[in-house]
Length: 515
Ligand code: ADP
Image (cartoon, rainbow, N blue to C red; front, side, top):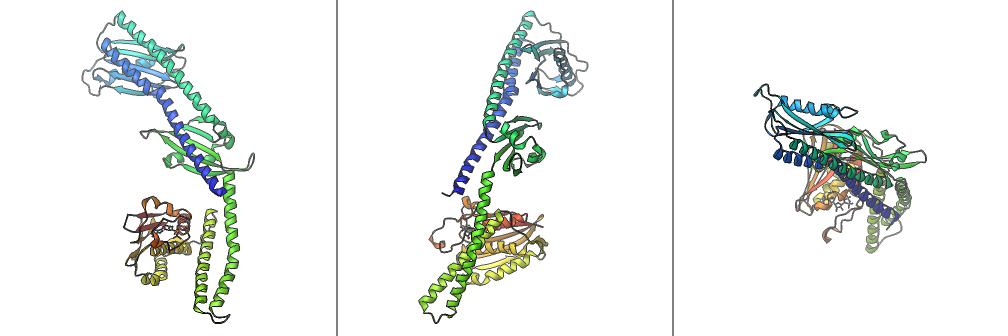
């Protein structure tokens, strides 16, 4: 295994681990959120309202609770359908009575409401009002954190027993909340320690864009400047697709930080916030750079002697060194074929290293895609005929002009049609279609050949990837670089390329170019 390979593997492992951690983190966060907020609180409220219902007569039972010292939630449960006025009255009473016990008042806007039961918006039973109402405050560590209220539109004289019961319930509730908060803060500090220990930089924003988690690695890498990582809104818009970018830092020392920002959602698809992960990839990038420099250097150096070898073989074949016998000729023809192959491999390697280094230059000019198709058809017509394959095209009368590097797009199409020809047996058919699809020009190359197994459809665009074939196609030896080069070229044009194939139906390669 080469160093690059093992580095890649190590990288993949790190990435997998990182993804596991994001997942863990988001779950932990979600759990700590729900513990404090919904799950237990709702269960608890439900149990309380149910048991109250059995013992005390009421029309409305409400609970208002402030958790984490900030989030407030109120659940109002109506035993019978009630008018909106009544409901509003209870709501306001309960808020007022909690505020009377707290140093800082909370307003209706800060409270999340939930209503169980029916509210009537019509004018029936006009004039109805709350007649009986009873509040019990909930205290946690001497601080008033909530109110439990029962109310009725009838005159109910609550007995001492009932009131005592309500107080007992309230003190149980307070104890439960206290325990809950202890669990919660233990959970939170566990999470903090875990995040802090990571060598990767981690930050998490909640649904209100507030920074809720951040470790020192993150602060160290960003130096506090979050603008490097992109706008939160942009990351939100991308939803499931993480924003990935390399940041080149000069201070305190030069390095490359890879940042990955993604939205997180709970199981129901509810948006929870954004997680950002930063990793120092300086070493990786340096090796990548060295590798691509090396490849382009070697390719250049190989070319010169190859030109000389080819020239010598040509001279021999032309009889410059005297008459050759058939065996000698065959040998020379074979060498020449392999020299050509070597040449192709070298120029492919050069192309791919330029693409990877982001160094391909596009010479873009307005061009007519139809003429490129005609050129490529002309190039392959003879060999298609020889293999008894029908090579056809379907071009609409009028095609929009595209601003492209014609030579490079020609190279893409040549590669696709060349492949189609390689992997299609005699009597087959290859069809090139070009048409406009919205703001893109779409080019399709379809063949009736061996097709591509589903699991390989994406992999064929990887460097050196070749689908495992039975013997009949091993004679056609390519470089495994044609498709990755095509992909690089199409993407540089702002287009996309992909393959489709149904078992036994041949393959279809499609690429698009912006109009
Ligand atoms: P090469 O053709 O030089 O091997 P490519 O990158 O062009 O390299 O293609 C990679 C692989 O994808 C091929 O080796 C082949 O297995 C598969 N492939 C490409 N085009 C087709 C096609 N039209 N039909 C079936 N397989 C194909």
